Image (cartoon, rainbow, N blue to C red; front, side, top):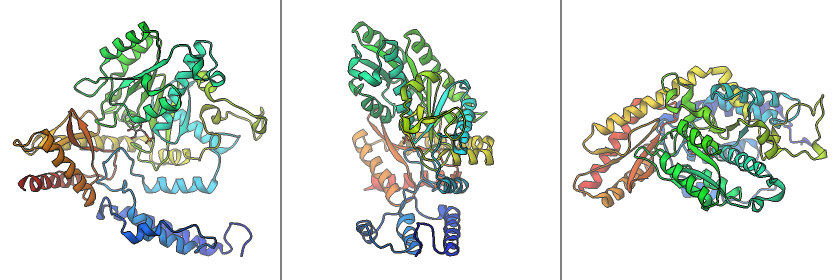
Length: 483
Ligand SMILES: Cc1ncc(COP(=O)(O)O)c(C=O)c1O
């Protein structure tokens, strides 16, 4: 027995590793043949209740459990008919590069080492892609939630600094009048979480009504800001959306920017998935104004199809960003040269050690090139338009809102039924489609109507997948209403 965690028999581990890769390649190649979801049977669920072993079962056996009990009952987001929520699909090359990141096991973003050079380079690429000044700062984060949190934190701290308050030392209670944040009612709940974690309190997150296209009503926004000022609140930040989770709505970012300038507010844009439309020559105009923001959050694990967890936030005011997070105890002191030199990205986010997530992003973009990603995004938007046509040309279906990006919301409809009954029917359609592994839509309630919702961030989907989904939706709807 080896007295380290390295193998005593390297050859057999290498063989096992090759097998894992071979199996995963075959998983990817056959993914479309299986269901979108496969409920784990009782004995599999029972397996996950086993207590921690003091003697291991061996690497081959553990891998066997992965193959038989874990992989077949997964979330399923690699399937070509998975369009629920907003998730990326992953792809084989990204999986392999992610494995290399685990092999290197470097701390990302700190020290004079390649995982730092590469994260910084990738962030510089993003600045170019999103038309942000090269002097901006940025950091990789675990997801859209954390990217939003970082942006909203810098907004808070900058406002506090302007009021002469060192919020990191004095805390939020040192601010005499409550800070207020503004966003549309369609904004993702990660913003509520961030406001809660920042100690602002969600009572001070003003949820502004939307117009008929589910974009923030800019007039109501301005009136609310004015009212808050009159009442002595301290307006701090507006959060705009480049692709809402529910309908893919894109707020009028240019108008939001001029409102923010007028009232001296920070503009943060949640572009978790939508901001990537900007790399398409054909559809980039849909998300115009991203670069008017003070901070921009976007994921790589949604519409860049990369494996979890990868996202980024860019911030124009590098100094405010640095002052929000910089902390340097003596045990991580840096120097001008040598191992500890260089910029430390832990000065720009809440974590000290972060996984080397930038590697899979960098390798994928470097290997594949942005054009191919743009083509996949265009394909997704074209698919959304195709589904919109299928829906509007069907007597049994009703489009609930025009398609603005890659999200389609619709419902099955029979004239004789009112909204209450239709809501029940559509809810059952969604669960029947999900639970039978036909496809993975999710839902969204729009104007009191329960909608079947698909968010297409899936490079594997083909037209035939949408044909099948719509056909099944109508078939199940007809069965339910024939009863
Ligand atoms: C618009 C938007 N913002 C933020 C998030 C949160 O992102 P994450 O799940 O990566 O933290 C999501 C998730 O779907 C989203 O759709």
